[in-house]
Image (cartoon, rainbow, N blue to C red; front, side):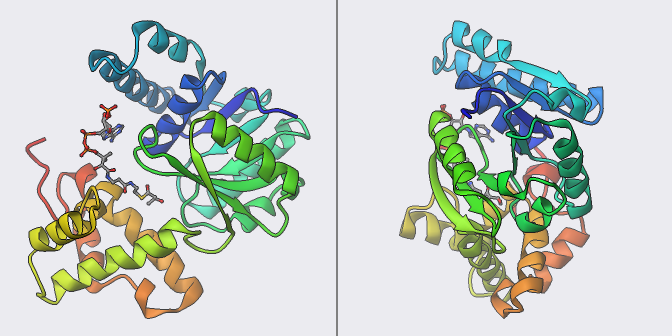
Length: 285
Ligand code: 3HC
């Protein structure tokens, strides 16, 4: 069954980006949020992003209107019952995700594929909350979704080869390159990225160098677009702390253990760009 109609659960930073890319590539896309206010906020984010693309001459006004015409909002999972693929990008809480998946399982046709954008939770556990574990997999996008060219496909012990193939074809239609990982914490990218980010925090904590020199080192020495501390501010210190804890719990290896400074910054509410303060100050923005 080809994927023609897409549903996205959650219209936060990742969900809105995913919905935008799907609609832009011509897929009729339904976005689900829990309240009209959250839904409106997410749709406004998409409208603003598309408006900026038109202003910059990266997109025609016609294409923007076509993309917006493909998008529809709903505040109930029932609104996703016609979809061939539902991509869940809700809060990173296992109980909430299990509930969403079991509800979607009871609503959607048997052939519908259910995918999670989780960066850290166990997809196998999410799949086990459905009666279709063969049609459940991970589909992990990167922030900012419209810009980053990669998606990670995550195969559980129960995902069928047909599901993975359908998701590969769909990802290619979105213009994304794919990599395939089995369901282990961090998959491929975060398994490497998270210990790297934690090492940068340890380096700062131990007084090896200033935040600017650590970031400049990795930008100019290795060609990264952002230094690790800038990237932590971009991804969110709270998000990284959360992922690191899950990885540490599972692997019990010191390199995944969040350093004390990271924990204290999170406790102080210094989450990075989203809270106005992280390793750098964004309060003037
Ligand atoms: N949302 C949407 N688009 C954005 C954006 C955002 N937050 N930030 C920048 N962009 C777009 C701009 O509109 C611009 O598009 P254009 O070329 O079509 O005009 C393009 O990105 C480049 O932006 P800028 O020129 O303003 O800025 P930069 O050249 O500095 O690029 C960046 C910004 C793309 C964010 C770049 O710094 C970068 O690639 N940083 C690294 C991002 C990264 O590593 N992401 C992965 C994080 S890990 C993750 O997501 C996994 C999770 O599980 C933790």
